[in-house]
Length: 238
Image (tube, rainbow, N blue to C red):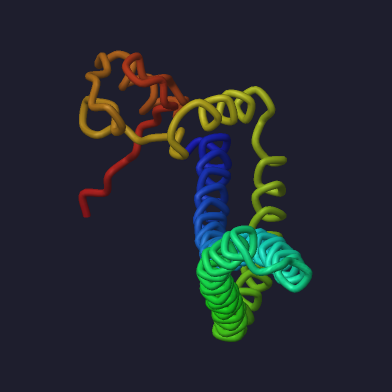
């Protein structure tokens, strides 16, 4: 085999090894992201519950204001009744007092419901916070395992990258540039052996004279169909 081709194939092998490590590292990162997203989603439920509490408190304060207003009006009517003389005005004030008492009773009932709503929403916040804490606790062990795997893979990647860089240095610059350009624009496999009389990647037929030149010289040619770097692979008949 042509020495340049041999070095090029070694570089491609190193690149495939590095790619496989990167894929496993990416899987770990995706798992970490999934854990993070689960926590974010759980924390979002706390925000929803907190906004509901704020709205319930606003409603309660609003009702409290009306209750206080009606109580002051009631107190004013009582004082007017105390200083008024029996008669039409007193009867009218008494009627207004009874009506206002009913209204006040409804408002106070609304206040109790508003207070219950606040308590219910506060309970939702507490429950959501407890769920987040439980989720974080559940994730401790998986996160530790992922962190360990990531550390191992990062070390493995550093070793694979160093081996790849060393292999790349051994390839002639023009050939390496051509190879790198192909890898950047297509699938990871840029150097492909002939399969019979055709390209091993897209199966486009290669003329006999070009196949013969590749066989005799060990040169690397280009596929007219898909552009990969083609080489002739001697097949042992033993």
